[in-house]
Length: 223
Length: 223
Image 1: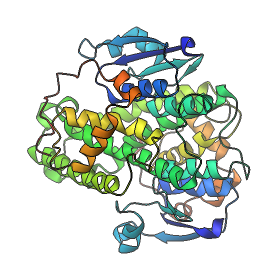
Image 2 (image 1 turned 30 degrees about the vertical axis):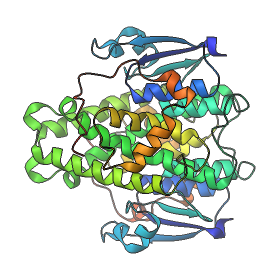
Image 3 (image 1 turned 180 degrees about the vertical axis):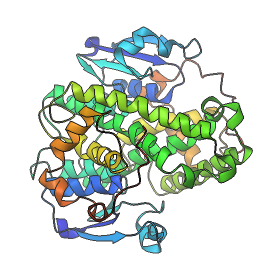
Image 4 (image 1 turned 180 degrees about the horizontal axis):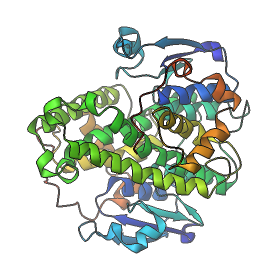
């Protein structure tokens, strides 16, 4: 039941958005939630640490179950609420296999994006190199080229015609990248995917109220 | 059917091992397989690229479905072969939630291991810093402390008494750490977990061949 669920989240955080999107898709609106501030380091507060020793958001409690990893929360919710809301894991083996493959390739996509976008947060000043930034840029570019290819060969959604768990997990990162300056001209298939899904009710309802300003808005402009 | 499956793999690769353990657990022995050499760069061969544009192992084809990401292959196989072999996703919500949470926490664990093991491959000489190596080591130490805590609070397996998908995905990471010289004294719970599962038939049957014949480098000795 939604009222037995609690989500601690931060605005503009794609992993948090995934869980909110999932809760909308499964018609679990009305869950308890608290918006915290990354800038004020609230993700390292005792309240979060009590639920998530990693001091990260999202922190999610579903009844007595702790599911802080966004993939874990989404898979568990789909399993527990199979017959409620939208069916997000298709029965057809073709669509299911493609869904799983894309969903886990998204882990690599996110790593490469974070390597670039969070470089200055993760790497102390004395260890930074332009050559590393260049390499991270090239890696993300190559990765996005793969996804352009995937999206050209599919229908509206990652696994075909149906919106699946793969889209729940990937869309927030695509939206994040376009917000931070990714070029629609260079990535038309990604732009088409983004535009066709941005008005989906669950996505509109959970759209981040604001995006983090400590990342420059044109960070991905040159990718 | 196992004979419609093909696995390209490398010895000692945790992601490859995960898929092999899964195939044993689901009684899908008899699949087509080919052992390739990372040292000879065979993971970048045309044969691999035809199945996996990323040039990575495992590369896995299940009938007509490509499932190169080890987590994708394992989830798909569990779904398609639910009633065959060991049941690896428990019905009990308690065990299921814990299984999902741990199996996705295993992702940052593996990332931290690889960051250390592949440091000299990924970072060109001019960009390497002792401070980065130190930081990576501290990151893994903190991560392993979390897992010692988790394993102290559970039964023989990550999600309780039953061997689940979480163990299929996590065990190879642990075995890899001990292969690289992780200290049993400093990590008694991880050691107990490792010893408790290393003779499980699916694990014994798929143990990396070259680990039986050659010792591993002691990279993790001081973690």
